[in-house]
Length: 133
Ligand code: ATP
Image 1 (cartoon, rainbow, N blue to C red):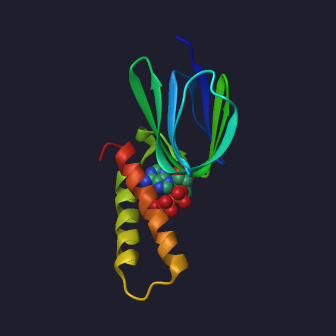
Image 2: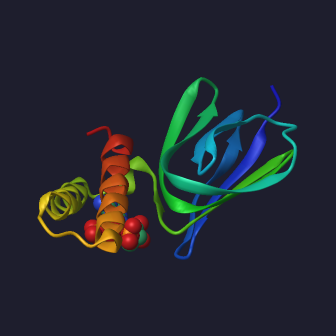
């Protein structure tokens, strides 16, 4: 079966590198599934759990925004932050989730703070999903 070489890179370094059969992410424009031979594209990413399929196994990676660059045989995910399941501190994500929920539930919200809290909540929920919690 043909494969794609995938790199998930953050400002702190490479989080995942390997050959997979399919990459699924949520771009800002919607769900994106990439198979070998895909047309080249660059797209901004939403906060999401990237799914990297290889030999019927799925490697999940939490991705906190950034970009995906697709070439026919190579995918690069350039993320602001990204974690594989074992790198996720579940307690930290739970605390971040609680902080974000408290902000969203508090009265008198400025729109900017609301958006910021919503994004923080998405990051925390995505980390918990990827960690299997
Ligand atoms: P927090 O409020 O807990 O810092 P955050 O969503 O604001 O969460 P980010 O700004 O997305 O954090 O990430 C900052 C750095 O911390 C990144 O390197 C990211 O990989 C890491 N990080 C954030 N949350 C976790 C977590 N729960 N487990 C492991 N690493 C994390």
